[in-house]
Length: 98
Image (cartoon, rainbow, N blue to C red; front, side, top):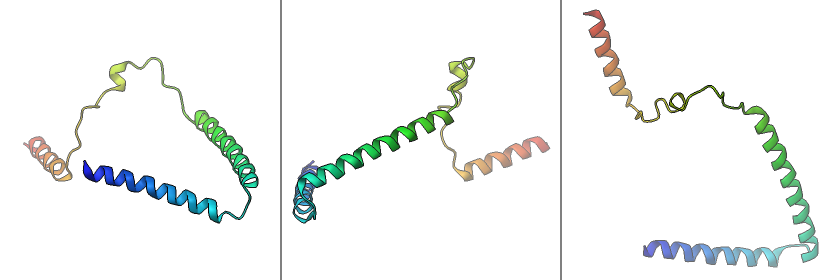
């Protein structure tokens, strides 16, 4: 728990120092910087909207005739190690050959 407090304190102090350095070393005035940030924000919003709409066009809606059990089939299956899977296949081959 103490490590977590130190990490959070360090992150806060680091972010404050970083913000101070950014403000002091910025080559533009505050007004120019706000205008540029506003333009970049609008551009980012538009790109995000475009990406969202492109993604929605690619996603196919789920078929309504699928039952809930079909959708959840196999959801509790655990991953199998490759060695165990190979052993299982060998056993199945031996059983089939008998």
